[in-house]
Length: 441
Ligand code: AMP
Ligand code: GLY
Image 1 (cartoon, rainbow, N blue to C red):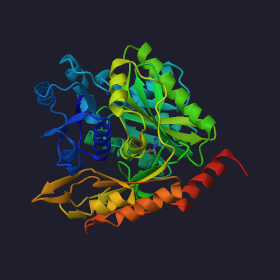
Image 2: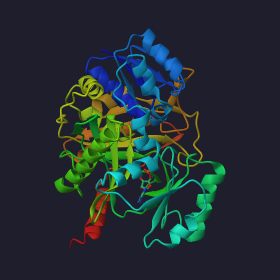
Image 3: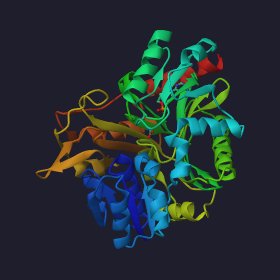
């Protein structure tokens, strides 16, 4: 089958690999020169990923049978609606369904209206008026979020980034003055616990779960520093995490099923990968956000261990014929993102990265190029994450080791990595934290 893919990051590199493994002929659209995608694709086009007219034209010229959209920005612009109008089935949500990610107030209102489990206290505002009075009525800590898309970086949490009513109001004014996220502000109850990602495939009514993953948003080791798009992630061989049991997982899947049903009942059925970000609290999983796509880096944890045919899964999502069982190998994975120095604050693009791909392959790890470019035949850093390195093994310990072994074959003086991701010491901290939250001895 001829498949159009949109996006040039690590997530899309892993998706293109999964399509190629399934026998697809890939036609890739991306804005940067991702050497991995370029090598695997039958053909590619450099383009702004939101240039809908140009992308639809390309898809028609190439006669593609199916389209897959990696990032959220083109979904918000209605790329799926345009491709479907041109007769091309899509394994991604249309503009109305993508609101589950693109409008945090749409998500919270839907979850509220349909009595979905795991909601948090919230109120949305389209001006700073009334926010201070509202805050004074609350007896819990809060989180401030711009309503629209901000690339995961616009959220500020009381007790972490905001320490007083004054801090909160200053940030609220900053969001409105600078028009961050464009559509207003949401004040949300702060959930306390451990975060995890539960992604599912979805065809409008049926969901098929993927292994649970934990991402690391903070830029620096020890979980400090600014929030980023995600510095790395891990998943365990039993598809749970050491601090998440089957009941917690069932709770999160129930929430996703309820959301899928609510969207269908509300007239905007959801097709594509749905990404549930949850906080596991002492009262079970709470919804932090729902995304309309694979997580990045989380896609790199699950796609390499997918045992079923990715092209068929995507076709089934597009056509409403998905089976609720999709198989993944019982392997642990640890993904660490190589990022340009300064990523999280002021990234330094343009540094050469040298990679010994042969040795990485020998190690058994998988490497996915991300936001890099090719200049004078050299791979150079961009302003976002550069290379995702994924260790795969029977246990987390060995997967982490595998990832670190492979990272030694990536050389540059313009990069950094959070080496603590996936280490047993950091995972034990999560386990201890969750025990404390649940009140276990
Ligand atoms: P988001 O962009 O919604 O994923 O938020 C970025 C990060 O902010 C999340 O990964 C959480 O660590 C934190 N966060 C967002 N919403 C909440 C919440 N309601 N309670 C606690 N932490 C949150
Ligand atoms: N890893 C976080 C995200 O993709 O939104």
